[in-house]
Image (cartoon, rainbow, N blue to C red; front, side, top):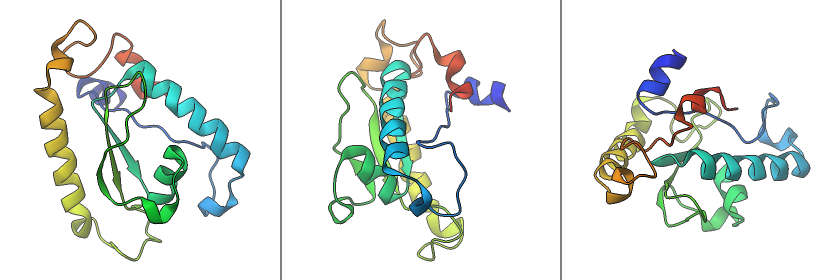
Length: 145
């Protein structure tokens, strides 16, 4: 699986690695440390699209109030990173708004469109990238957590 993930330039990571039943069990210190580490990873790997799974996580990452973030493509930019940011509702079974994978398909369709748009962006054809959005460090991406 990891080899296939690298072949299609997809990486998965999290802000806090500790398993919990609910986000409310995480401390502010864990979030702050995780956000700092994630920012560094994004600058290092410079993915084409960064997708946040959950409004609360994205709000914490960008330093906004929950009421000020909406799902979809974000205008947020991280200095040193050319990625497009996207936020979707949490896919946890605890999220009653979209209880099935089918009810969330529109998010995945939008992400697919964003990725296609990024692939034709002039940036990804420069010496900074291999042309698929991955940097020279892309072989390490799937091992990042």
